Length: 308
Ligand SMILES: [Cu+2]
Image 1 (cartoon, rainbow, N blue to C red):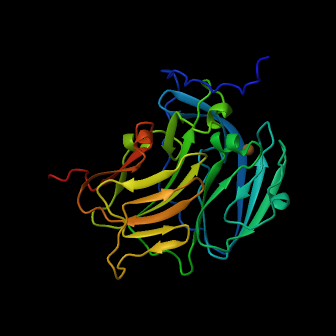
Image 2: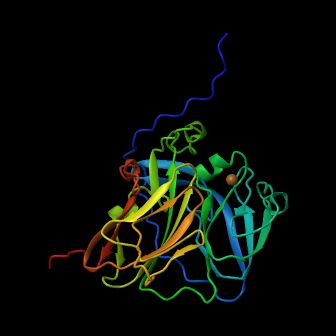
Image 3: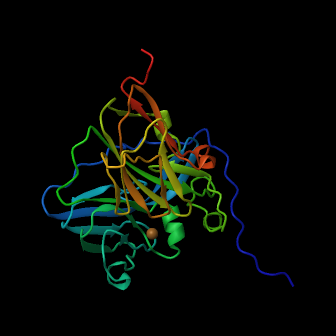
């Protein structure tokens, strides 16, 4: 008698030359919200999204984009997120910046329903939010995640450029369909694309301008769902790293610096660097098999040319 087998993972579809061009995501980190209590509307929207040139996913989103919007608040702020499910299936919400019982606020939000998730931003950091509806793996793999920035006591120092990057994976099903659960669920998963801010190679095609000699701060979250990140910016050294509450500070007594930050799924960091000359400074996960699958972008300092 044949043993039952799990559904086979889908092969990667062929690129569709007629797929719409992707919509570039502005990587600029938003300003911190003013005031101490915030009402934020976050609709759940199902939407076709071009995730790489020629590839369309029927994504499930917070706010109509993958990742969802970056929410940035002060330490101690109270946040009310009004989630309206405009989609065709149930979802939930899980803010890692919050502390709440799973069966209190991470509750099923049925199609057409609205739920208000309230939390106090009690700890500073860069936090993941995501849908936790079973199977959470599929809901995250199909786009339901985003970043919360909680500034530390006293706020973050002003810098010249602030960038927010979420690394994640796409496991493609057929063109125009949701992510492939069987493919995402392998114990040795092989994502079709690994991306920054939802789209393969978008900041390679469209470098992010930064100030030569200035300070650039990057908020990085690895949303996964499965793969680790080793976040590195070619040609730079991080003089400041805050990773999951652990700090390396510029000007430390030993003169220590950092080259790459390891981020398991759901981990995050704030890094700061200074481009020392005009030129191109690529950012990658230093797991280079993923660089060839979309996990690369470029910081362009000055005019991008070190030789003029
Ligand atoms: Cu969901």
